Length: 137
Image (cartoon, rainbow, N blue to C red):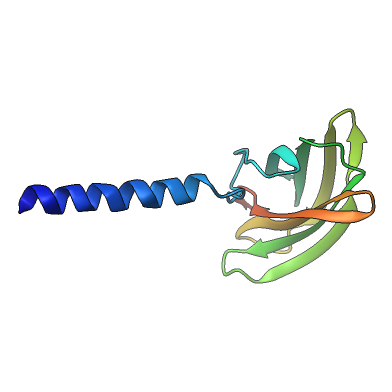
């Protein structure tokens, strides 16, 4: 009976793992890279510079994209949005980059949550969501 139960649990585990591996989307955190259908990777980081924080995001295209646009929200430790910025990424070869500076209003921890939108032929291909590492003022 224990063998049958162990076998059934193993099958359930393998099926669950297979369904996660089939997903096109993974959360972006810190400096990790992810995979989507229109891009091969996204790199996002937040660094402190004086009383500001600079968010750098790089997107490497998998298919030829016309543009990448983004909405970036600086959030505090409680999750409250402190500032929002939008921008169009600059293309350099197969990489699109965007850098935005945020003023840090007071002491505390901050990170940037972002939504990126990839476009080809004027049509939005994908939405990529994620967040950066945390910095402290």
